Length: 485
Image 1: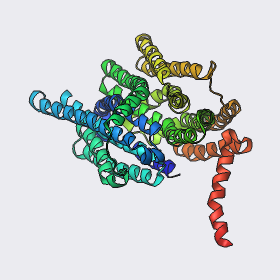
Image 2: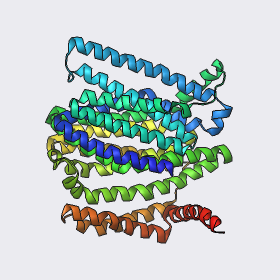
Image 3: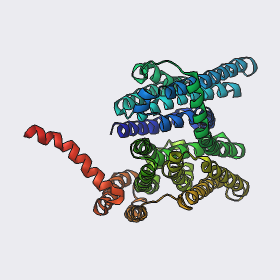
């Protein structure tokens, strides 16, 4: 529960922080900030994601004590790549002072993006270690400290120094500072280093992680290419409209999925340690039903309240384009969530991650064809459609690979169908409210959607969620009953 609470806190503050920075910087500077942020995420993915994924797959409470070379190999690899990225940031900053003086030069923005990538990489790695140890309290403290520092430093930078480079630098420094504050509980017991074991460990990480980061880099490259395409044709302000819609949409759909993945994938890894590969694959299949049952209503609900959300929450300068872009991107980001949190885990458990690259390449190709064909006829909105088509094509290919053949994954099809029917019923109840006054729409739609979907989930025990809720309630009430006795 601490992990879920941490993600609720993280999602809420990031949502507010994104809107606040957009308001303080304005469309043009926010477009530049978003483009640099997309570049920072690509750099973080290429340099560090293979190590973070290796931490979630190979590190655990048992490994922490019995196989210390796993953590040692992760730490040393992070140190090497982190120092290299920091040196690159310093070089860009120094060249920027000489060649392009000023905070809006390309070299200065590159230096800020490199610092942001470094901070993100350091924080994500240590957060993954805490989750792999099932230390929910430590993970919650990490997220809380990071969010407080990020909110204060990034909002402060946008207020006092309203240029993207300072906000990027604040993003990186705040995340690294959170790890420095909590460095003691994050440490492992001291043990001697074995160079032979370290070499074997790095080979294991490379074989497992490189296909995944190649695919993730492609997926992170999509928004970078698309934002650059919009900026080239419509200007930085149009890129800012697109970026804010994309950021809010992907967080609204993907944040809960990330929280679920943090729990469900680690659960599958633990099942494999205790009961073997077949049991772990069966657990992944059950996890797919849970992910669909919880993320599909999030996507449908977000679409239902989109006009009200735009009118009440989105900064005035972004209204109009925000809803247009977000509505077109919802299906694509739902597909991306399905890939990341439902389909990828089966290949991670099997340690056969190359099919993920093939799906990503297909998605990139479809996106590129869409960029070539659609914007001349549909304008900037064609970029959003191209992105959705690319993500949908990648999801379809990966699903075919996972669900066909001799080693196909067995899915709870009834739960998936029931989640779709329940989400449709919820949408039919919410559609009439989309056109009423925005405040009333939000006040009525959110509780009504929760009630309609929740009742159907409870009646039909979709994805076993009723059973999970009853088990959790019994755990909470058991201590009280024992005290009364």
